Length: 427
Image 1 (cartoon, rainbow, N blue to C red):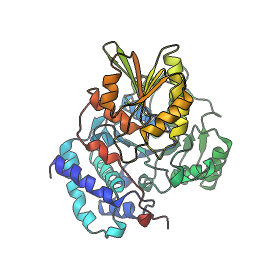
Image 2: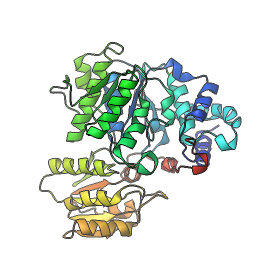
Image 3: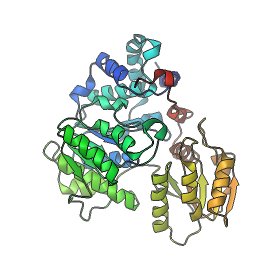
Image 4: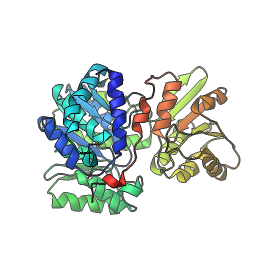
C-alpha cells in the first residue's frame, strides 16, 4: 500500500460517520493486540486549550529526556500531524503500513458496527506509539470524553482543561451536562488535574472524582511551582494552560521524574501552530488563531488587545455553521477596522452573507465585505499591516498552505465528520 492509497482508505472510512460508544474501538484494539496496555498516558479533555496543554506537556517531557508520543486532532495541513513521536510526524511509510495492517481486522466488522475513521486512527496511533517504545503518550480526546474513542486507556493522570459551551448538540445544552461528558475520562484512583473554575462544572468534577476515589487537583486552589516560568505561547489563557501543565507534571513527578530546568526549557520552546501564531511576511504581520467558539474568541480578543494595542487590524474570518458564530462575530468584529468574511473549505461552513450581517451589527464603523476564498482575501489584504486570520482551525490550515507553511493536497478534508444517528451507540 502506498501513502496515497492509505489516505484514500482513510477517506473511505468517513462513510461511517462519527459515533458515540467504546464497543467497536475496544474490539478493534483487542484485535490489534491491545497496544494501550503497554503504554503510559496523560489523557487530556476539555473545551478549549486541549491542544496547547498537550503541546506543553510534550515539550516539558522531551526537555526532561523522555520519549514522548503525541496524539492530537484535527490536523492543520498534513494528516501525519496527528501522530508524532518527539515532535516528528509519523512517516508516510509507517502510516501506509499501519493502514494496511488494519484491513483484515476491519473486514471482520459488520457494516452496522464498523469502526469509524477516528476509531481506526486511534488504534493505529496506539500501535505506532507501542512500536516506538514511547515512555509517555500525551493523548488528546476528540469529542467529549466519556464515549470518545480515546477513552479506552487508563492513564497516569486525567487532565480537564476547562468546560465551556461547544458541541452542545452532542454533549449537552448545560455546562453540567458537558462537564459530565468531560468527566467521563476520570478513572478510579487516577489523579485529575483541572483549570475549570465554574461552580457548576467543579461540582460535577468533584463528585465524579470523589465517587471514583481519584485525587482532584484544581490549579486555582493550589500553589504551583510555575513561578517565573513563561511559555512561548502568547496570551493570558496560555499562562493558565502553562500552570495546568506544570501542576500535571508535579503530580506525576514520582512516575516521570523531571527537574525545574526541564519545565523552563520546555515551556520556553512550545511548538504549536495555529494558536496565536505570528508570521512576518515583508511589511505584513499575520496572526493565525483557531478561535472557533465563544471562549476561544474571547481569549483571542484579549490577546490581540495586549499584543497590538492601538493598531489597525484586518480580520479574515471563516466559521463553521454548527458553531456559535454570532457570538464569535460579536466578540471579534469590534477589534477590526476592516473585515473580510470567507467560506471555510468544508460542507459545514457558515454562510458568508450571515457572517457579514453579524459583523456589521458588531462593527458598524468598519469595512465589512466578503471574499470567495482565502486566496482572494490574502490578495485583497496585501497592503494591510496586521491581518488576523481566525474562526476555524480548518481555515487556519488552508491559510498556512497559502502562506507557504506546508502542502498536503486534499488531506485537510479528512477532518470532516458528521454524527450518524443510525450508528449512535449510546442507545
